[in-house]
Image 1: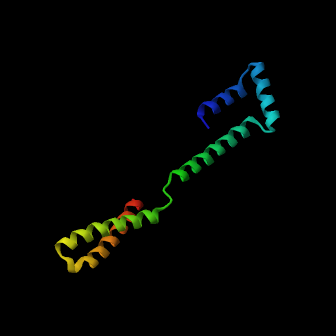
Image 2: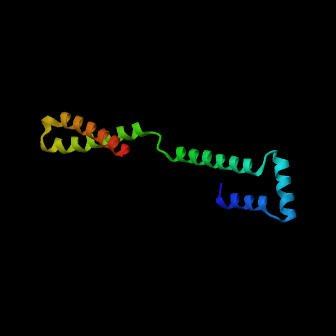
Image 3: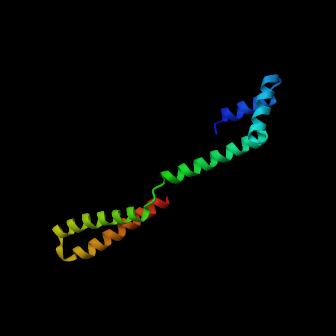
Length: 110
C-alpha cells in the first residue's frame, strides 16, 4: 500500500468536512470495518504482496546452478590439463567440478 493512500484515508477520516465524514462512513458501512481496520488490512496485503514478489524473483534452482558451475570448471580444467599433462586429466576434472560447486555455494551464502 502506498503511503499516499493511507495518508489520504486518514485525512478523510479526521476531516471536519461533512461530505468527507459521509464518504468515510459509507466506506466503513460498505466494507464492514473501521478505517483503522481497513488500513491495517491494506498494509497486511502490501506485506504479503512484497513477500510473494521476493519469492518470485529468487532463483529456485540453486543446486542445478551449482552443478552447472561445477561442470563448467571441470570442462575448463579438463581441457587445459589434457593439453598440458594428460595423465592427470580425470583428477583435475574432479577437483574442478568440486571446486566449481563449492565456489558457487559459498558465493550464494555471502
